[in-house]
Structures are given as C-alpha cells and as structure tokens.
Length: 167
Image (cartoon, rainbow, N blue to C red; front, side, top):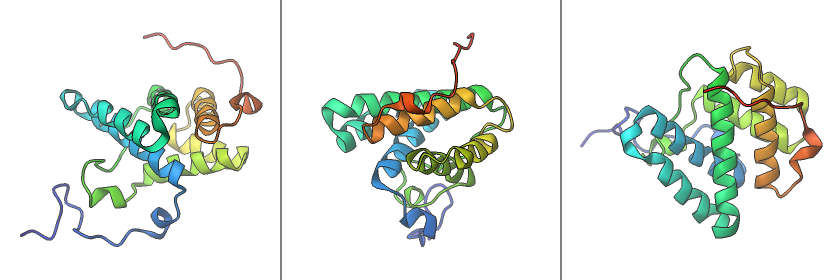
C-alpha cells in the first residue's frame, strides 16, 4: 500500500493552517470551482456536473444553482484574463481535498476580501490570479459570488460596466 494518494500527495496529510480556517461557504465554493477546473482539464470527465451536485448538496435546491452559476462565472472571468494554467487540487481525492495550491490560496484571498468588503486586498489577490491583466470582470464576479453566498446585494460593489468577451 502506497503512502501517497493517486495525485502524489501524502496520504493523511496534515492540512495547512490556512485550510483549517476556511469558512464553510468558501470551502464549498472552492470545491465547486475545483470541479469546474477538473472539467476544463479533462473535458470528458464531466466534472462540472459534480460541481452542480456539490452546490445543491451544500446550499440546497433553491440556492445551489445560483451558487453554482456564480462559481462558474468567477472561474470563467479568471480564465479569460489568465494566460497560464491555474493549479488546483483534485476535488475527487480525499487527500488532495485537504490541501491548497498557491493559486487556490489567492482565490480564497479574493473570496475572504469580498466578504470583508476589503477592496484593496481583493485587488491585490485578483492581480496575482489574473497575472496583471485587466481584472475588473473577475473582481465583479467575485463580488457577485459573495453576494450569492451570503445573500447580499452584489451591486453595492460595482466595479464598472462589464462587456461581453468575444468568443
């Protein structure tokens, strides 16, 4: 029996201190996003469906779809401005679920800053995630996600008019 999980992480890892202090809503949002990232990495996996299942299980049938969509919008906004790969942990591996990558840490920084209405902290983390590119759509999507997670009006944090990206 190996002492590593299928992704090479140690079995029964000691979760880092940051992971231990994640708000339940943020952990669930990160798990949903990890499923979306996994779906982008392996399209045939249909991992996005698991993200929808997590959203409904964690937030209920009435709020779950809205949370799932807000997470998808945040992932999409980030992907449109990044040029490099976003590193994430496997959402389906019990060992990996307890760990955070540096990129996931920046995403959590964004979520926590939005919850605290700390725009400067959010902008710094967004700049790192978006690799210095225009992060306005991403920042707005994080505020929208925060509004969905905590039942707040996301409009109070409007960043500016968001234009549709050409596909």
